[in-house]
Length: 404
Image (cartoon, rainbow, N blue to C red):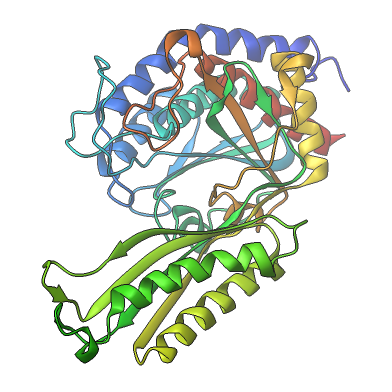
C-alpha cells in the first residue's frame, strides 16, 4: 500500500486524530438521542436531527430514501468504488429504568439496543471522512436506517427505493452488551441467524367449566401444541445444525368459570440453514393443524419470514479485520461466536458483499451489564470513539483495497 494507506502512518494517523477530537461530541450526540427515542417508522425528529448534523458537517449530498431514513453521499477526491456504511436509529417500546440523567423523555419508549450510540458514532465517522474527503480513492455512502427493530425492516425498504444502487461493499457495526469495551468481533461467514415469527390460533368451542364435554377446549389443545413444537428441534433437526423454536405468548380466556372459544399462540424461530428454515416453517404448521384436527378444533397458522441470516463476505471481512487490528490492537480482535439473534443488515448484504461487526460496550466495573432490550440497558460511552476510529479506518481500507 501507499504511504497514504489507512493502515499505515499517513492517512490512518490523521483519521485517528480526527476521531480522537470527536470523543466528547459523540457522547453529546448519543445523550441527545437517548433522551428523545422514537419507535420504528416514527423517527421523524431523529431523522431531522441527523440531517441537520450532516448539513453542519458539510460535504455530503443528502437525501431521504424513505420518510424517516437518511442517505448521505460523500464524493472522494479520486475515482474509485463506493462503500456503504450503515447505522440504525429506531428505539423500542420499553419503559426505561436506568436512572440515567439523560434517560428517555418519551414515556414507554427507550433506546434499549444501542441505536442511539450507532447514530452518534456514524455522525462521528461522517465528520472524520468529510475532513479527508480529497484523499479518498472512491466514495462513501452513509445509510441511516429507520425501523430495524420491526418487520418488514427498514433495510429492505431502503433497498427497494435504490439506496444500495452503485454500492460495491457495505459495512455495519453493532454495540454489543456481551463483550467488554474495546473488544471487537469480526467473523467471516455466518454471524447472525435468520429470524421468523409465527402465530397459531386454535378455534375451539367455548362452554362452562363444569361441562367440559360440551366444549372444545382451545387451552388444552394449545398446551399440547406448545409441548409438541419443542420436539421439532429435539428430534427432527440434525444435531449439527443450530435452530431455535420459541413460544413467547399464549393468550386465552378472561374468566375463571368459562372455557374460551379461542387460544392464540405466538413465537419465533432462529436458524442459519435455509433447509432447516423451510423444515421449521412446514412442521410448525403440520403439528398445530394435526393436533387441532385430532381434537375437533379449527386451526389458523401464520408464519412470517423476517430477516435472513447475516453472512459476512470473506474477502470484505479480511480487510475489515486488518483495519480493526490497526485501530484497536491485535488482541482486541477475534472472530467471536455465532449469534442467534437477527439483524436486517442481511438485506444490504443481498445487494453487495458486506461485513457486520460487533463492538464491545460492556463494563462490569461501572455496572453496564444488562442485555439488549432490557429496561436497564446502557452502553459504555468509552466505546463510542473506538467505533468512530474503527469504522473510519475500515471504510478507507475498503476503498484503498479496491483501488490497488
